[in-house]
Amino acid sequence: MNIDANVQKILSLLFKKWIIIVLFAIIGAILAGVYTHYFTTLTYSSSVEFLAYVQDSNKELSDSTNAAQQASNTSKMNYAIKMLDTYIELFKTNEFNQTVANEINKEYGTSYTAGQIKGSITIEPVANTAMFKITVITGDPDMSYQIAHQLEKSIPSKMETANNGMVSASVEDIALKATTSESLGYSKKCLFGFIAGAVLAAAYIILRDLLDIRVKGNDNLSERYGIPVLGTIPEFELKASASKAVNKEKGEQK
Image 1 (cartoon, rainbow, N blue to C red):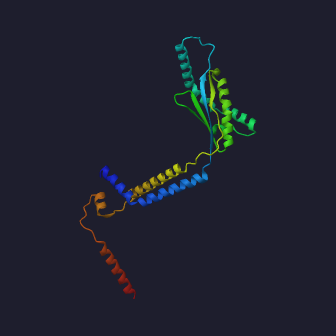
Image 2 (cartoon, one colour):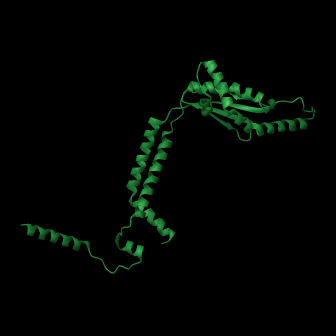
Image 3 (spheres, one colour):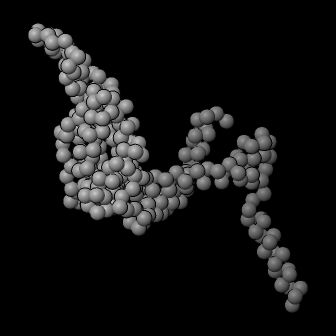
């Protein structure tokens, strides 16, 4: 049997069992919706965007030409971009996050830990620029804002003390307190559950057919064993024989 015939067989099998596939898909979508409703926590986000730049150094030679000045500025920007990954790694250290937690706890009377701060922060550099964005996501809008607001101060301060202050950071987009929670994504998750249910049902149907060693009709016998079928016993004769046997048994009992 060639590949096309195998594919046709599988498609035919799935088409015959489409009710099972649809049923599994609906169940998957329902389960995804229930899980989302009862086991997904609402989250709130607050973000800050920074610009990294190189401070003018006293060691630089002064040049009055515009071309030289432009080249110097380009070199500084390239250096800032190149160093972004290094600074981002510094912001992920336990020491830095503990410092942020201590400052927040001191200001707001909270008891945040370095692990909570670190787990809530996502840092993303903006492609082909010297800018980077920090997003704070927690289950409390106040906590998200407090962390993001503190980062407005802690990030520039950390960069001033690292690498001899070669690269600094300025806040270009301040943190705002979230007024609504992030969407739970019912439609997306239910669609995923629907697809997962359909795939699971299709896999079950195909595996069940492959593992079924029973012979189903003349064509299946010839296809599987290459044995020609010379004749078959009609089903009605079997039923008639069985009926006679039952009637005979009843007569003997009488």
